[in-house]
Length: 253
Image (cartoon, rainbow, N blue to C red; front, side):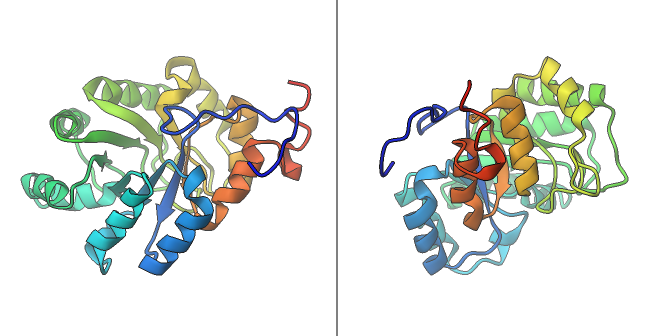
C-alpha cells in the first residue's frame, strides 16, 4: 500500500485460498490486458475468459502468456466445457486444455441439461489433469433450486474433486443466487453456508451492491467472482472499508 492507515481489515496474501477476486475477461485486447495488469494485477487472483470467448479470441496464446507472466492463473469459461461435452468431444476438450497449457478448468451445466452423476464424473476426470472449479446453478432464470439442492450439488462436486464451487449468477448478476432485480436470495445463501465452508465457494457478484452484501456477511476475505476488470480496484477498497458502502463497517471490529 502507498501509506499507512490504522484499523484496516487484514487481507489474505497471494496465492490465497480465501479472499479471491475472480475477474471476467469478456474479450480484452492484448494492450488492454497489459493496462489491466499494471493497475489491478496485484489484486487479481484468477481470470476467467468468459463463457466460450476463447474460441474466437485473437492472439489467445499471447493473451494467456501475459496473464501468466503476472502470476495470474487463467481458465476458460464453463460454457466452453459444455460446448465440447454436448457434442461428445470431451477428450478433444482435454486436448485443448493441454495444447494451451491450462492449469485450471471450469465444469458447469448452466446451459445444458446433464445428469449430475455424469457431471461429477467429468469433474473427477479433469481433476487428474488440472485444478477444477465447478459451477452450480442454471443460467435459466426460470430454474430455481431449493436450498437443500444447492447444498447437495455443491457437496457432491467438492467430493468429486472441485477445488472451489461457483454460485451461479451470470455476468449480469440476475439469476441463480439473485433475483431478477439483482437482489440477493438471502435465505438461500444463509442455508448454503450452514453446510458448505465459505472458503470453498466463489460467489459471482458483478454488481457493487452484491459485493457489499457478501463482504458485510462473510468479511473482507470472501471469494467473489465475475468482477469486471475496471471494478477490481473499487472492490478492493470495499473489502478494506475505504469506500462509503463499508466505510465504518470494520472500524469497531
